[in-house]
Amino acid sequence: MPMPKLLQLFLDNQARPKDFRSVHNEGRGEIYLYDAIGDWFGISAEAFNREIRAMEGEIDELHLYINSPGGDVFEARAMATALSQLKVKTFSHIEGLAASAATFLPMVTDEVEMSEGGFFMIHEAWTLTMGNKRDHLKQVDLLTKVDDSILDAYGKRTGTERDQLIAWLEAETWFTAAEAKEHGFIDSVLETDRRQAAAQWNLAAYHNTPSALTQGPPPEQQYDRAQAERRLALIERH
Image (cartoon, rainbow, N blue to C red; front, top):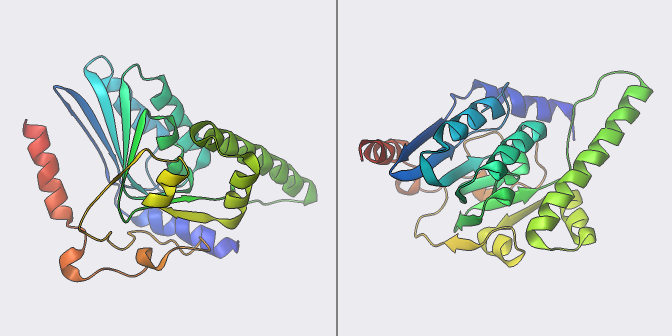
């Protein structure tokens, strides 16, 4: 992985306005994670965890809506830990993309639904390293431990053999909704007549990004942010 591409992914996502919202009403809590994960270039674990803990005691179920290119693995792990500790039923709805670290969160919710046309991507952990050869060797050891943790999370959810999971991680595998369901990463597929909109992020750091995420659909099928905001406003008024 060339370092400039990874740095550019961070910088491009840092420049985007943050898109993180939550609402709760009549026992139902909703969190919208439509951004990268990480305090520097996306949504922090501290902000995410503060929101869901503020809802605890006022909701019976929590619905997490995800459209994220991933981000900081340790921030995502902290988010997943907080989700797993909630004493309410939890649901994940992958509405477009759950890539890299963003795939951690659905692994700990009770049910996972993914929109038809969405993607679920897993790969080996990355990092940026500076220093001498000993510093780099330490990072290799850390990355190995992170990969083991990732494999444990996917294995627990899917029941897939570890060798197969390792192969998928090494290959940077992008699953369609149907494939993610077939392999146990999700529980159900939400059918839709609309194509997924083009990616909102720079995904050039990834090797195997599907063309559907780099080429936009016709204008009439593109993601309507204004419509989504009107839907959220209606929810907030009820």
